[in-house]
Length: 482
Ligand SMILES: [Cu+2]
Image (cartoon, rainbow, N blue to C red; front, side):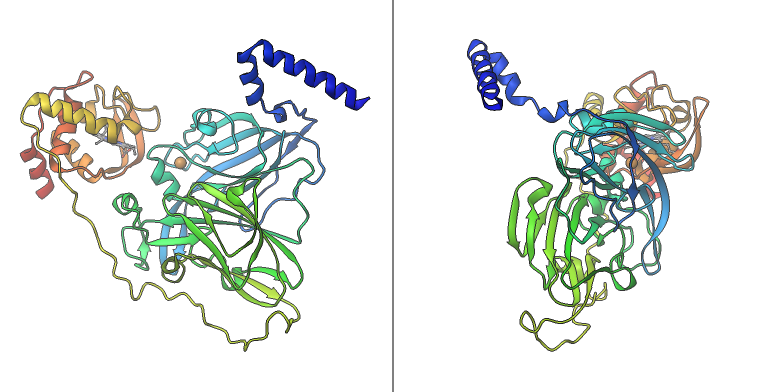
């Protein structure tokens, strides 16, 4: 009975395909998981790393409410070094979200009123423009709600995608969302959540105090810290992951980047199974698995012998000098057949920054040809504007309410040229009033040459109803040397 029905439907399908080529293409791209019905509503359990929520098991697809709050908060990168983290849910990486295929996720993204900046979220598990980013742009004190259906099982990264995107990610705005297949993933005894990230600070590795983000080092991909779970030592000593001999362990490992690729390895353990790139394909007996920036992997192994197993990025200076080192402590009876070496502790300890000599690249490369006329200044200035300022101040200089002040007809801009030059050279924080509206946010220092600053400001002053001033290289140099 079932078989004849199947034959009949394939016959109908085949004839439809023959009838229309256009129809055939539509059929090929359809995802049947879009038709999974949802029963009832459920609030998603969110967890902080290294913990993960309860497995979905056999539960049916549901309307799943995710409540996620963005918090900008100071934390400790390593002993004596503070950092202003931007977080999803108060931790780096952000709260773990666990769904199953066919869930209808209703995502509530809240931006805490004490935060300084607008944010949004791009979830790689979303099928839709921007992965949700376009629907979730939210100012401090506000909430945005959007919804999506999980079509593809796998382990996915989510991250903030607000300009400057690299900076938001570099400050810790990433996490993982798991979409389990129908019936759930196979049972294991222990599951943990780990995410690698690279950090860029004004001071060198280990330099004390509150360290601001360094845009130039980030652009150069010259990381001061490469860490698991947001800080040096998040998974060592008392914070180590644990398991007992004989248990099976599943690691959900992601890489937030923003830039570096992770060569994830556990010293003294072989991965029995790796869901490559977080997808369906399983590789077996793996020593080191590559986790791209903005990617993830599911790693499974059974622990057979006791000891402390060290988790590293096998780009090994990162592990011993920049922080990418964690521990899995396994307790239980030794098994002499599998391993019987002399056990001595303290082989693999972080070496710290002592032997590092990090190049500091403070000079800005000025390779371009200087503008020879007003027209050229306008042309080059527009190019620089579209590359650098556009993301925040927008195409027509109109800005974004409550977040980025306008440059079009800006009384603040037009009142003082030297001040405007200073802002582009050095950045700006603290409360200002532009055209009667208050802004209290951060404009990072823009990495432009003296010529570029002159051109971009000439372009801004001669656009959108501003005061038509011309800014020369000499004027910029004067402000720079004051
Ligand atoms: Cu953000």
